[in-house]
Amino acid sequence: MKYSLRQRLIGAFSACLMLVLAANLASAQKSSRVQDATRHAQEASEVFTQIMNVRERAIPKELLDKAEAIAVFPDVVKAAFIFGAKGGHGLISKRTPKGWSAPAFFNIGGGSFGAQIGATKTDYVLLIMNQDGLNGLLKDKFEIGGEVGVAAGPVGREAAASTNLRLDAGILSYSRSKGAFIGAAIKGAAISPDNDLNEAVYGMKAKDVLTNNAMTLSQMPAGVRIFPRTLARYSVR
Image 1: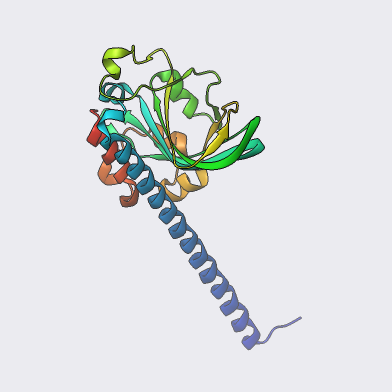
Image 2: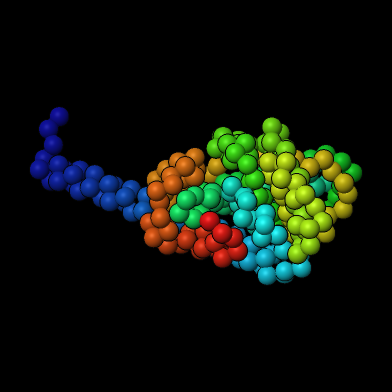
């Protein structure tokens, strides 16, 4: 079957148009994901700043200076009626010889069971205190409290003097609730990398972001620099 010149031109034009539309769609999706990353970084930085600015109830600087990595998950939604579930997004930066690393993007989720009813939004801050905790973050899925010990972190100016800072725990956890939640449930959560977002922002997975000690602040995407800068404001390298 032969095609006329006009038909061939129309076919070629249609193919080119499809390629242009596909490229524009991919560009728009990448731009949207970068905007998501910027929003997550800003929200996490704001939460951390607010917590640290209440000095009497802030995380002790001695702990921040010893942490191998810091995770912040703002506005984690927790809702339940007998069975419970929680989920949210956050960032994790690792301490490097040059300061805090580019933040990798993670999801937090999990379930619980107990006599509970209600819903709330909670901000979580996790201090990863040793290499075991750090290695856990590099897995595809990290069960909090599984292989790595977790303890409630001390707060306030007197914490360093009144406690041993629980340095035997791999992770120290903090939370700030914004709503009511009734009942006592078995606490459980898992952290997993949001590699769709990491690859959209960095072109690499979370594990590679957190092990890339060569990336400087100026080399990070502008929208996410606020998070390591915020951490550096309250802790030494």
